[in-house]
Image 1 (cartoon, rainbow, N blue to C red):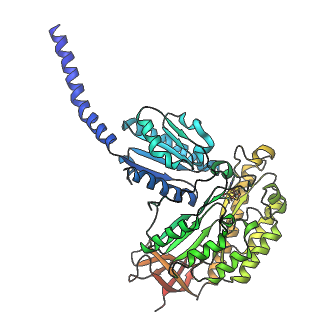
Image 2 (cartoon, protein in one colour):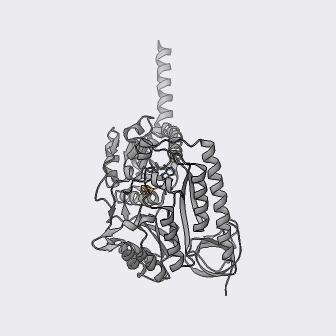
Image 3 (cartoon, rainbow, N blue to C red):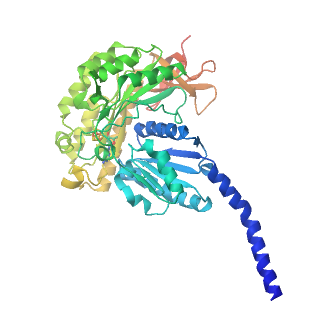
Length: 466
Ligand code: 5AD
Ligand code: SF4
């Protein structure tokens, strides 16, 4: 009996000895309010993560760049294609192991997947918080409610929220380029796209707040801003349209470069083209998603323009701005796409002479018009073959475009040292092309005139012009 008691005592003692420090560490871990945020998908999401960082910092959370040390881990997610969602699902498996080790670790899912998958995201037992893109002001309250043992959930979409008064904390920035979100939502309802359902109705932000944000960034040493929205051409606030807004921002300082993304071809106005042509600090670069070069596909996609109209817009751009860089998005293997439709895309790419393209296989998204009414009937291997042909075509076009720049003098905004060598700098031209050149005298944020001497399909190489 005595021995038994002693044994029990010993067991308890060992238990206390082993567990006390871990318990204390757990308490310490939970007392510190730190967050890590990982962003998936489009530039808009990266911009949103900086808004989230601002809301949390105002509530005394500190940004923790090391995922293992944070006691709040947020994934800002994307639903545009199945692949994007699968990456997040895999990430959650990894976080499950981390959650087992760190008592009190909170995992939150933000962004489009939160909006699309809703409570389903709680099912794996890893996620404590699900918050859609219009509920980020609510995050501190939602997190507090988890601490009292609940799961937190808010996916209400707003018709007004623009986060205009929130000053983003630039966690994703290199100190030279920054995003400014000017509008949110999309109501174009392209038949394949989930965005109108996950991000809600279009709404624009007051121009004064946008200009004030750009002025502040410039005074802090930033030299390039990108005005962001799902469809910036739809920007409209109290008689200020997008071309007028661009002009207001470009007038802040000639040393501040202005870019924008993304435009819908149906709304790309002559007024906007003229504004881009008129100011040297508005970058000569337009992202204009084509999606398909086939009129039959464009109709099924509900893009509301024809191949001919798209190409006439491209010609209007080249006429007003001969050195303009044009990039695009292309979806291959959309519902019932034939070889002839695919060839139309290849020929449209050649006619438009794109400098760069983001190219994707069609991925059916539940709830979209295409998923409801059309058939995702192009076989996976055909989608792959067509995608490879489109990629090869774009590589050729990018190479040809870069070869045309040989011998030219180009103004480069330096972003930093190149990955390959500390003796080389890298930066971008107004057309958004990457330039690498030997130089140790300049630094990030400087403008340098470079003569282009060599190129690949991806990069221009050059020498500083003395
Ligand atoms: N499948 C494949 N690509 C898509 N995109 C949007 N929805 C889908 C989808 N369901 C592409 C379009 C868009 C870009 C952001 O993503 O090309 O312009
Ligand atoms: Fe999606 Fe079309 Fe809106 Fe772009 S314009 S976000 S592709 S619905």
